[in-house]
Length: 616
Image (cartoon, rainbow, N blue to C red; front, side, top):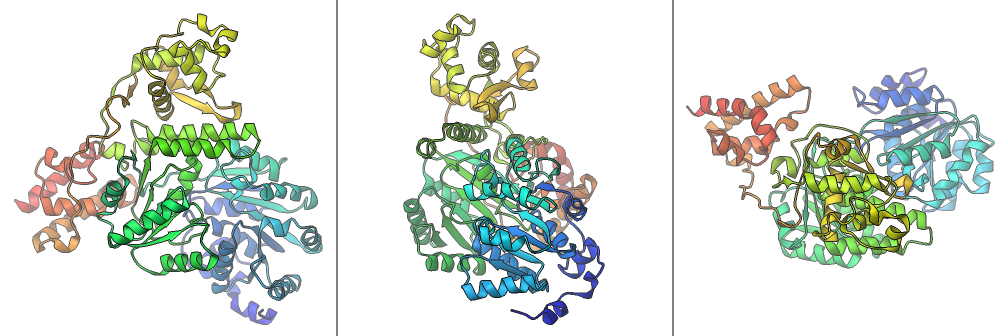
């Protein structure tokens, strides 16, 4: 443990009376804050409780580390993982900031040394697990110190509404009574409206600010597909990613081992990682992933939280995740450096059955089970979204955007059919039954099932009873998922997953707008055009390299006009293929990877003009 003199010597002198920007620059080496960071820091420094929802890679750690450095007193940061605590402490120490972790993975003597340094005032930032913090002895010891802030990382674990509820995290709600004058900060990348309300109520019920920085990660290309031959689908996905690192998520330990062995046999540098391995094997695998190039980590969800590797270029799910929140958190590990990254989720009926079984076997709390089933319903709706996939994903978190142009449905739109009449049937059944029932009951009404529930409530006398009897239950289930994905219906988790009609759904019901959907009876396998793999820059001729330079110049000009990163217009791989293939009309340009209908219409003519001018 360093002496007080050494610690003070390590901290740049600017910290005496410094402001957040000075600390950002002189301690952490950054010239400017990312969006939202400064606002959160200002609230915490003013002594205001804050719940901050920020996308993965948004720089949330600086939002509480900078106030901790500038505050008078000790800041306690609650973190769920020992490895994550150790990494954060090491990073702070490397920047000259005195910080310690106190957890069960440390020798008792080291823990005592760390605590003595805190008591002497040598350390202002302490990382702990919720279990260690909420022990009687630790609470009593903290009561003798001046505590500036409690920071709760991964705060969604506090809430039973959240996807990763942990009982030991819920104990943190007791802190507000014992430390009434202390500022609380809560941070998460994954919390819908109900979860946010519950977190704030438990941690600071009487006052506080919730700041939702946004959920959109425009650099992530989103894709999902029914799983039919996972080996071939996975190899197709990895075909142009030989020199890049990524994660492949699997549902079971056995499948993890199988996939890792398969990829190794295909010549990939693949590592299996799951909770069934001993700690040494997991650490070795994690170290390899962090230090080696072009590594594929094939893992269960035991891997990922706290992994600070900014250049993960892809995340592939070979099984359905447990919820939209889990999916969002897992794909968020890709592209944290802001550069383009890809995602792919494969899903099948076996995945759905397994997920349902996991939920039903999860304890005796029936209300919790209902919520988890509805979360899974929302994820299935995302899988079957017939239009912009990013729009459907962000709508779950109450965020609205225009079509993104960077997902599979935008780049290669599925074939849609007119489903207005069936949509009106189903929406009418939702409306006439009072918007208080879930999917199963509404479908029973539409199909004319004489269940006890329907007969008791007289729903067999409704005009919509039996109007959809010619279609199967599976058909109507897929239809409901697409109505949810399209924004015509919402699933109210707080009211036991009942279906509710949105404003858009009301317009469909009144005949003011139509509804197109992907008919599940047509096929579950999309008829895709065969597209060429992107061509590496190294294969371009001198003339084509000059064309590429001019295409990039146009892209930069357009990006500046729209105030977006250049890759949002077109990624490098798309421009490289343009420079090599020389498309001279819109039809040929549409065959280039990454040129979807929206971008073709918006930018096609300008890029074609550059190509025509250059090749004459």
